[in-house]
Image (cartoon, rainbow, N blue to C red; front, side, top):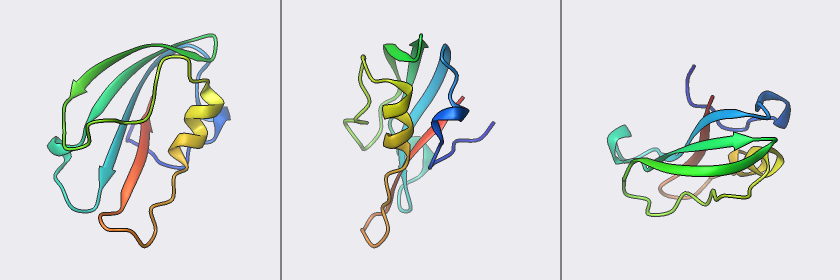
Amino acid sequence: MKFKSFVNVEEISMSGLILARISDNVLEEGDWTTVLLAVEGGVVVGIDLCIKGAYAETGVHVGMTIEELAKWSQYDPTGQHPENYYELKF
């Protein structure tokens, strides 16, 4: 499965592993910070850094609900430079 922005909460499993990243329209994929989230019961219970990129903070944290993750993924970067995209992969 590919990374996806604008995720609906119904698409996110109540338990499992999810990759989260902030990408953009300027840097290369290897420059995008990516974290692995462990989700149990619809809540993020753990985070591991997979790729340390240009963006020091992804904005996701332990305790976030899948509803909050869905809202996070719906960030709209239109008109900014660089345009950042908040993406999930599950």
